[in-house]
Image: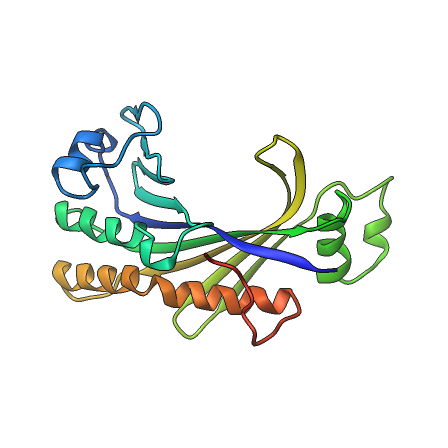
Amino acid sequence: MNPTLEIEELAISIVAPKLNPTLLTADFLQYSGIVPSDWQLAREPVLNAQMAHVAYTNGVNISVQLNAVTFSENIKAKALESVAVPSLVCKYVRALPNASYQGIGINISAFFTFEGEGEDAPRNYIAKTLLAPGAWQEVGQELKTATVNLAYSLERGQFNLKIDDVQLRLADNSPQAAVLFSGYFPYELVGDSPSSKLENLYAIADNWRGDLEEYRQIIAIFLGRRGEGKVKSE
C-alpha cells in the first residue's frame, strides 16, 4: 500500500450567539475591507434570515448561520503564505468586535487515495488496518461503508478526528475511492474581558500553522510514517 495524502481544505469557524446572517453581503465584505476589492464572486450569494453564503473564484467561501461564521478555503495547490482564511477571520472580527464571541475552531481536511487499487481499498484500510479483525466484519454479505471517530487530548487542547470511506469525483468526472481525514481543533475563548477574549481569538487564528503541523504529524502516524509528517500541503 502506497497511499498519497494531500491537504484539501482549511476552515476556521467562530462561534457567537445571535449572529445576523443578513449582514453578510458581498458589499459588506468588500467595503469593510475584509475581502480584497479585486476578488470575484463564483456564483450569486445566498442570503436569508437563517443563513448566508458567499463564494469566490479563488476557492474561499464565507458562510454565516445563527451561531457561527465559517471561513473555508481550498488550499490543495496553494503555498501556505498565500492562504487567506486566517487573515479574513481577524479582519471580520475587527469589523464586528462587539459580537459575543465564545469559541473558535480550526478544521483541516485531507483526502487519502490509493493509486492503482480498487474501490474497496479505502474501506478495507479502515476496517482491516485501523480496526482489529473480528466476526463483526463478516456480518451480512459485505461491509458497505466504514467510519472512525477519535478524540485526543493534546497539550494545547482537544483534537477530534473523523476518518471516512468516501467517493471523490475527479476533474474528468470519473470516481475515485478515498479516505477522508477530517481534523478539528476546538478552542474556547479565555479572558477576563471582551477585549482579552478577542486577543485570544486573534492568537488562535494566527497559530493555524501550528495546528496544521500537529494535524500532519498525527496523520503521518496513520500512514505508518511516525515522526516524518509526509503530507503534501502545497
